[in-house]
Amino acid sequence: MSKIYMQNDGSIEQREYKCFDPFLSGDCGQAFRWKEINENLMIGIVGNRLVRIEKKNDDEFYFDIDKKYFDEVLVNYFDLERDYDKILSTYDEENLVQKVKKYYGIRILRQDSWEALCSFIISQNNNIPRIKGIIERLCENFGEKIEDNYYSFPSAEKIASLEVEDLAIIRSGFRAKYILDAAKKVTSGEVDLEKIKNMSTEEGENELIKIKGVGKKVAMCTLLFGFNKVDAFPVDVWIKRIMEEKYPNGLPECTKGTEGIAQQYLFMGRE
DNA sequence: TTCCAGGACCGGG
DNA sequence: CCCGGTCATGGA
Image (cartoon, rainbow, N blue to C red; front, side, top):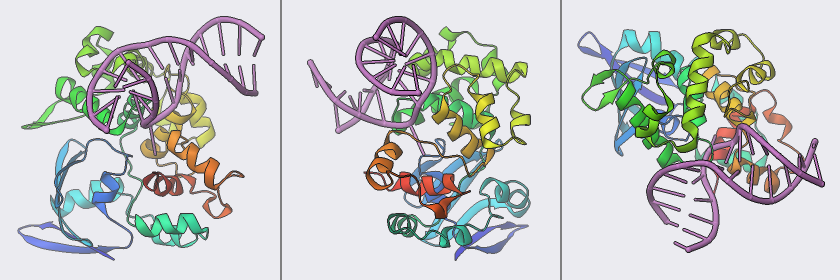
C-alpha cells in the first residue's frame, strides 16, 4: 500500500493506493518527459502543469500539488481507479509473476493521445535516452513555456504549421517527415483522435496506420499509452525476443484483456 | 569501426 | 505474404 501526500489548503492530505509507484510508472519506457532530478525527486508535466513528486520511502510519495488538481487530473493520469492489484494477482505464469513482483507499482499512464502518438513515432528504431532528447528539443523549440526549462508538448496544430526543415533542430532524422504527416492528418481530421477513443483496439490501429511512419507497433503503443487500451500489445525488438524465448506459443491465457499491462512488466524485465 | 536502438517503407520474389 | 536494404542519429 503506497501512501500519497498532497496539499490541501495549507495542510497535508493523505491517500492510500495499492500498486502505485509514480517513479516506476514515469520511468519505465512508456513516457519520455518525466525527469528524475535525483533518486528522490521526479518532475513532469501533466496537462500543462508542472508536477513535482518527492519520494519519502519506497511506498511514500509527496505530490507538490493541490488536492483539487490531484483529483481532477492526476487520478485519471495515473489511472488510479483501475484495480491493478486485482489484475496482477490473476497472473499465474512464473516468469510474469516474477516480473510483476520486481516492478510492482507500474501503472499504464493515461497520456495525451497526440503526445503519445508523436512520441512513439519518434521512438521507432531508436533508443530511450535519445528519444527523450529529441522530445525535449521538440518541446523547447515548439511548445509553450511553463516554467524555466519546462515546456508543454507542442500541439498538433503548431507542428502542422511547420516545414520539415524547421524540425532539423530536434535531430529526429528520417522521422521528421513522419511527425509532420501525423500532425497534418490529426489537425485535418483525416485521423480523428477523438473518435479513436470509442473504437476497439483493432479499429484504432486501422485509423492510426493511415499515418506515414505508423505501423503496427507504433499504433499499439499509441493505443496503450495514449488511449489506455490495455489489451493493446506492442511488440518491439525486446518483447519480440522475450516472446521467442519464453512464449513461443503466445502470451499466457491469464493476460487476456490486459496484455498491455503485462507487456509493460515484461518490457521492464528485458535484458 | 561496427553495431544497435520501444520500426516502417519500399521493392522484389 | 515474406524478405532484405534503407533510412538519421549518437552512444557503446
